[in-house]
Amino acid sequence: MLKYELIIDWSEADRAFIAEVPELLGCAADGKTYREALANGEIVVQEWLETATESGRSIPAPRGPVAVCVIERSRSCWCFAFFEILNL
Image 1 (cartoon, one colour):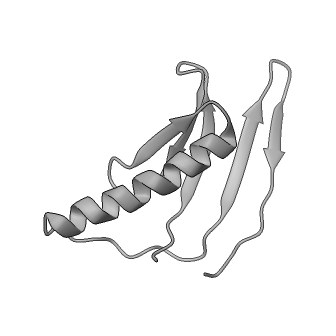
Image 2 (spheres, one colour):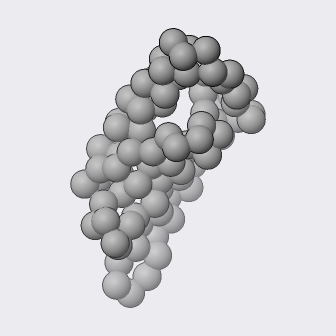
Image 3 (cartoon, one colour):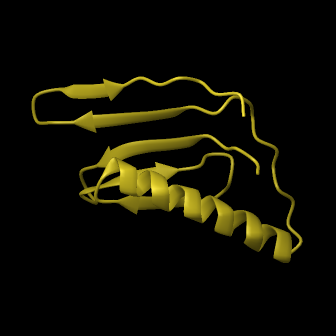
């Protein structure tokens, strides 16, 4: 399975975590928690790849090492969860 970068950030406007895959145009998901957004993001990546394959569209190669970073924001500060870069 191809591994793509997944960026998860909090959206105050949506009141949800948004998971975006920059390499796959339009590929995004959301969730009430970052774990839910991550799980939904993994699902939409698979669906994006299946749809592209079925419709004959080209699938971009992943850019490189996979990383996951969660950023949480409270009223008073930003909290960062740093991550390990995985070569999968």
